[in-house]
Image (cartoon, rainbow, N blue to C red; front, side, top):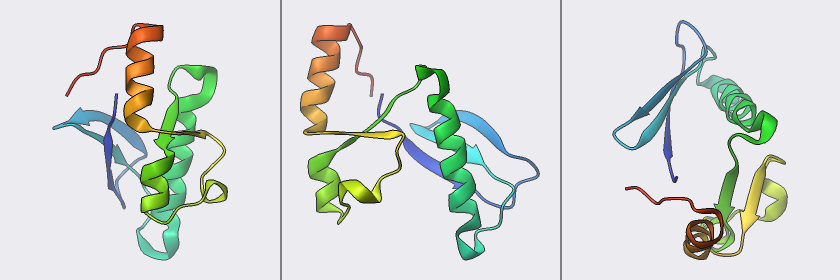
Length: 100
């Protein structure tokens, strides 16, 4: 599943709200200033990957197009050569479904 993330800083508590309108909604207590909300968001995203239930993958071509190098990514993000090819592979080899 490919999700956009919508974060709300300065929330009353840290919370993964769920998926709304195709976006993963996350509330973080940290303020948006000095990158504090981004740090908390990364911590929350990484917590989703604990135990292997959720895997976060990023398309290498798209990352490079946005100016990201592999060393810019966090350790819990797996870089795949092509996002579209990864979706097809997951459908064919691991019986995943692509929903839009």
